[in-house]
Length: 159
Image 1 (cartoon, one colour):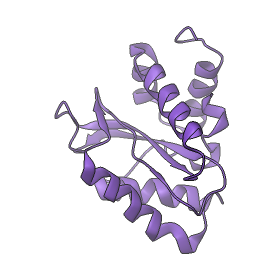
Image 2: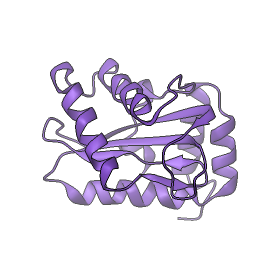
Image 3: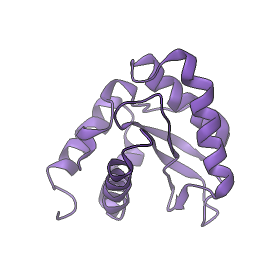
């Protein structure tokens, strides 16, 4: 699975303004709503679902990265977005570091395989220091989209 299979280009947030864990989730979910990927009447429930998942254990996986995610019946296909916070946000990460890179995923409950493949792709790509460094330095959605495309084309990590 590639980033282009689930990341909504129009929902990419190159300059997150959020300062808290919940406001990051709200900002990213709102970007998916604004880009037409989720329904307005499902916004609050999706945010609550993601925050409930966070209560089980932070999706801040370390090295400045978090992958907040949930399964939700309102989506028919896996949808996701990327957000970058220049100064980072306290996300209760496993390593205690502030998070700068966010990959938010929402998948249909009946398609767990897609969810797992997307998480695998994200974690594999984020092991590449160069990819992470470039992503953290990105200041436009276009720059982020280009990096994701280069990643899909295996220009960072071999497949």
